[in-house]
Length: 502
Ligand code: SF4
Image (tube, rainbow, N blue to C red; front, top):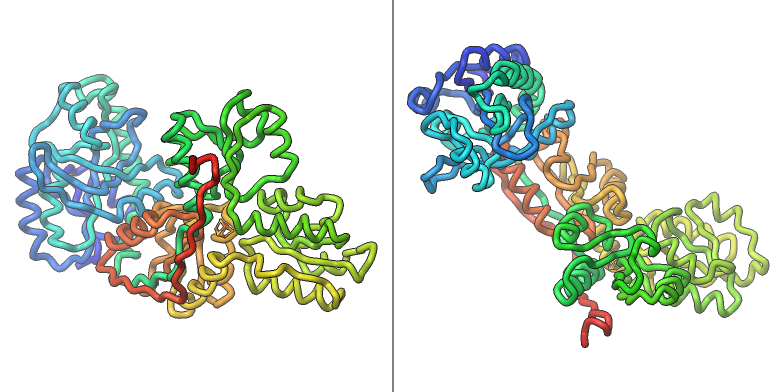
């Protein structure tokens, strides 16, 4: 008995799947409609297979769908019934299908007891949030009896291109083609199905500066209503930015995109004095969400520059925080990204060199560069207290603590998040494959095949809910045991700017 059984209601669907899946699983034709599906489920319940997939054509319900699009279930329900079966690994498979070049979305599927042809009936299902409708998935899932299961429906018809219309044949052909092409991803999904341990790094996710910055935008939205302009991403995270955009925040790259007299929020990464001057000159009401720990580095830059020091800023070119800090004293500051850059420094007075750091660097990498600076300029002055902030340091210590006990480490965070990228590098430096993901749909199933312990952390700008979504998705591949390694506890909170306290 194969590990994977794929249930296809119709012969043509089964044939397409067999072609795409090859020897990776057994395809069974289970028959059209809920009665035949229930009978097939009775037979499947006692069989020795370990993983179930249900694949076939389905009716599309969501706006913008086209024949051939794939819907992967996150849950399956029947209209009028309060019983819902969850299939949490749907986002993992949907992401994998998209990486194979297919149009795939994860979401709810409904199983109707009869063929629905009237537009109103379909609209009612769509209003409930379902993306696709079929007639077999709910009863067939009963046959999974707790084993990993997922439903893949290839859209053959939509409310705009209904079943009883000339679109039916091309729609059916497009659906069968997509089912065949879905085979390889389905095989990888099955290969990733296994019980596993999830090892959480603690602390992880939001830091005090990010929480404050998000709260600032939320408060301004509450007070003034949308739109609220924010210069640059408030924090470097796609999920956070998309959520705030949905609520009325408008993210702009430069102030000239902000209408005269509007309110603008400066992001957590800070801005240079030049940007503040421009905002004041334009009469914009600026609210500063710069993290107080970034502001501390700005103050140090001003102080050293005022005392006549040449300041080396250890950081990454192009990062908004670095641009803001360099802008505090452009004539006195030089960006240093590597040890080689240290050798290129030509200060006017080698006895008056100081250095500062970007707050989200790798502690290991930054101290290597600081050591090189001190070796070349033994009198060089550093910051009064660490510039690499507590949140960055703690998250790096925590990921280091789980990396060598994990087969793979997943870091929730966006590609432009410096501190999240440093977490990936820290885990990789410990010898463990590590990957940055915005959410479950970014997890490549090949990373999980053979990985019985998955280390999981999140950058300081990644919401805690994403960690929950990742664990949930992994639990759809088999039983998951979650444990946590906590290396530090955090209780830091930052107050809001004065404009929002009034
Ligand atoms: S990572 Fe550090 S510097 Fe950046 S916002 Fe969080 S606490 Fe502030």
